[in-house]
Length: 344
Image: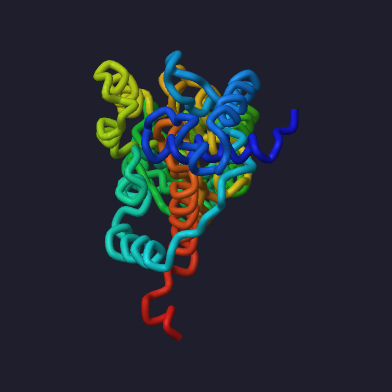
């Protein structure tokens, strides 16, 4: 059912007053503000409750938005805002001054200081990473060094020991085999090819080969895993919704101990918002999560999420978070402009 303009006006007013005060919104307040009678507002309240957009916490209380009401507000009624020039400069200064020595680790902490809600940062990892080159260096008849260069030009090495003695002069043949058939492959493809050559090599050479492929596969696995860092969990203690110690403890514990279960939405939208029950995990049933992604480069993306009550200030959070994410993308690309650059 399409809401009338007056119903939308009243819903928008209820959401924004509740965001600001955390107190149910009464008909008298809106009647005075909108220039209509209290009876008119009460009738609209009743219909909006019946339609699922508002809720009445207590019999004599005013109304509060439901998750459905917040969703309509975010999708249609919220006035989109941009960060002010002062806010933008503050975010850029923060990034230039404090982020360079630990961009991903510190990103969530910096966002929390900007939006005043708990945050989390996720490095999605590089699932497309492959090995560009192998080197094998003999140490003795049962030891060798594996050197792996991935296609992002990172080089890693490890001393390997085998149960069988091998001919160090054959390492050059194994290196050529690796660089011919195991570069540019996924972990699954490397494992599959390893099995296909298992009966073509002497046991001692196959052992060297399998240890090398296993080491390379571990590097690719680690690169593909996502890393989740949370910060600012104590911010929820400042919010009226979490005056209940047990309720606050449940959410804080989730943010610390179950952070891997925080939502990582699919899709290419610059900012995504999950409201109340839209969050799958039970611990987030009374929260909203605002998520923005940024480009790290080399095929990798990072994600910053803000966790707060469903009453959070969506307009401000989305504006600041999206600007922060855009600035991170610039930083990992061409770098942030300096104050001098902005003046030219």
